[in-house]
Image 1 (tube, helix red, strand yellow):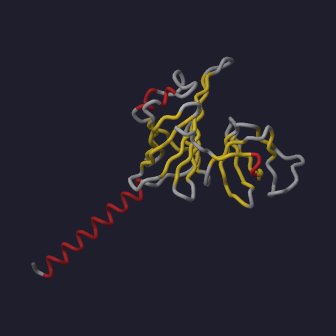
Image 2: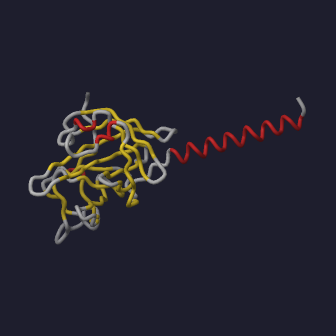
Length: 206
């Protein structure tokens, strides 16, 4: 084998490795933010955390809401545990402008049969419309949690969030979490809440 052929072969292999690596890097690029009815966070330990909530109807409404969590893989797909009252497996795939959420039994989550589209079983495409620097999601456990300007700061005249609200995490410090809450009009409210006022997203045991 000639030296020139060996050099060409090595160069081609290096190029292919670079292309594959770039493709995998692009494929794995989950971005935290709002995706239609979905809140998505990307944690420092390379997991995705999500909260899907969609409401239909006026007066008498129907709401489909569930949580999910799973590790990010190199191919841009995250296997998920999804849960509300029941736990079902699923997956999340990063796309150029959003994500594809697949839960074969997704419409069996409480409140979801007549709300979420049937495509959830084979792949529901969701578009990102707001980038957010969320490093996790938390669920409020206190009846009322004031969004303080600083950790351990005064709660006087501060906006507050209530039990079962889901918030994005911006930072964590000494048991306090700086969080962002988005209301139904996507207005943003930020502040610090203490660790006795929230819980992380933890799937129930099977």
